Structures are given as structure tokens and as C-alpha cells.
Length: 299
Image (cartoon, rainbow, N blue to C red; front, side):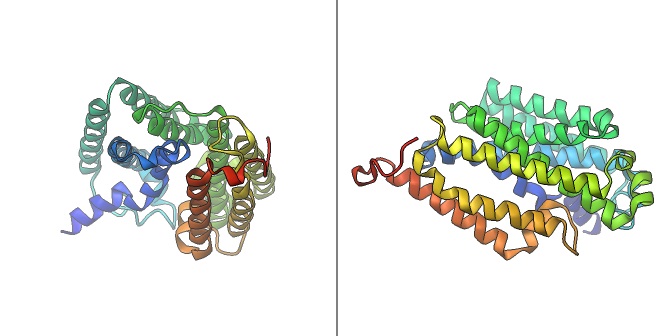
């Protein structure tokens, strides 16, 4: 039972929150009202839960020595000795096969996107993790591919603006994680654990966080005002998004640094922001054809 719990922990189910991005196409296209599109969207979510968990397993195998020297990561299943490298590799392979099987069932398009995601993960582990900036760009591309996969499954093309917005938001989140690692470990230990931290000083990261947050908001506003948005009344979501970005930035540079998933999970206000944002989006989609709203706002 102890080993089973450790294997579940290795898969990091708490991080499946990131895979909710696959529902972006379903929501923004307005097809969430079509029950037939929910099944493929749920399958894509399951697909990326399996694939991302496989990636975590192999990533922890690569990182096992650095994690053993890290006060925060040494309690993970592999460095703590609760899971052997062989067990982790077997679990990773099973998860990988499961994810690819779901991709195959969804069709060629989903299989291609899944393969691109695995290529991004593999290139990160084997190459880009040692190169600053390229590492966060590669991580962000994994999130972009999640958003694209959700659209491919329900045959909805992704908007270029939505892709860029997702990319910038993902860069912002990846930089939050880098900053938390340096603050928690200290500069010297952080560099020994992850060599790219020699480039990521706190001052430099704070500047990059501000730039990426600003770009994420600007691209989101551009998406809301563009022809591919669900409607011009999407502008009412902008204040909520701006508040959420500023709050998350404040949490990231605050006195209790953590990765973005941990920050969001433990902050009830961020959950409220997400619920309010989603409620406004759904309201816009349900009322965009109401004649009474015509002429209120123009692009």
C-alpha cells in the first residue's frame, strides 16, 4: 500500500489542474452546449493527464540526484527511496501507452498533437532544461499544445490570439516556478540543483514576470476584441483577468513562494476569480445573440 501511494504521488494528480486548458476550445467556441462534444473533450483531458503524468515520472528519473540534494524535493518518491527507478520507468511507460492509446482512439489529429507534446517534453528533458529562456519557452509550448488538442478533438480551429495568450500566460507561470525554486533553496543550492538558475536571478525574474504578465493581459484583450472571440462583450472579463494576474504576481513575489499550482490551490480568492471569470464567459456566450445587447459595444 505504501508503494502504491508513492506511485500515485509520482504521477502528481494534483497537477492535472493544468490539463483543464484542453476545455478552452469547448468553452470559447460555445460548443459546451452540445453534449456530443463533451465526450471527446473529456477523453482529451484523460489523454493529457496520462501523458503529463508519464512526463513527470521520467522527469523525476532524470532529476533524482538533484532532487536528493534539494530540501524540498528530496521527499519525492524516487529520491526518498519509496519508488525505485525501475518502478518509476514501468509506471511512466504504462502511462505513456495509455495516453497514446486514447490519442489513437480520438483520431490522427489528436495523435499528432500528442506526439508533438511528447517531443516538447523529450526535448526539454534531454536538451532545453539546461538552457535559460529556452526552458520556459519549451514548457509553455506544452500548454499551448494542450489548448490546440482540445480544439482538434471537437474540430474547432484554435485562434492565433488564443494560442499567443496561452503561451504568454504559460511563460509567466513557468517563471513563477523558477523564482520560487531560487527563493526557497537559495542562489547557490538552486544553481547546483538546476544550472539554469545561474541565469535566473531574482531581479531578472521579477522583470521577466512583469513583462510576461503584461503581454499575457495585452494578448488576452486583443483576443477579446478580435473577430475570433465569442463576442465583443468578452471585454467584461478583462477586469477579472487583470485582477487575477496582479494577484497571482503578488502571491509569487510574496513571503511564501511556491509553484503556480500550489499558489492557486491554496488561495481561495484565485479560485473565486476563476469561477467569476468562467461565469462571465458563459453568460456572454448565452446572451451574445440577444437583440437588446446589440449596439452597446462595437469592435
